Length: 100
Image 1 (cartoon, rainbow, N blue to C red):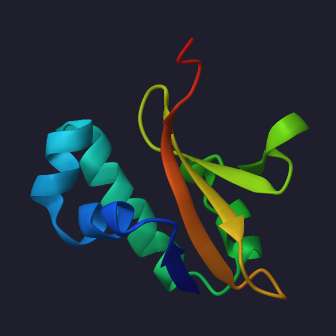
Image 2 (cartoon, rainbow, N blue to C red; image 1 turned 90 degrees about the horizontal axis):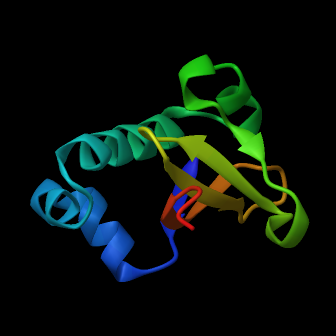
């Protein structure tokens, strides 16, 4: 699957683990990089449902059209589909779920 990044910062954090560690800490940074690698090796979003540890699921409400992938603890990776057949994943953000 093709992977795109919403911001250059997200792409830099994927390409340079030191930037990711500085921003998220080592555990979340490692999972972030690992999850993007998994996205790149998948053929489509359908493949992601088959990997239980991802806890891949669509979001609802004001986040309809977005999908979440588990990182660690409260952190998750938010992606959207940027292709016609769910074959392009766009990294939207690393989110601290239940941050409030």
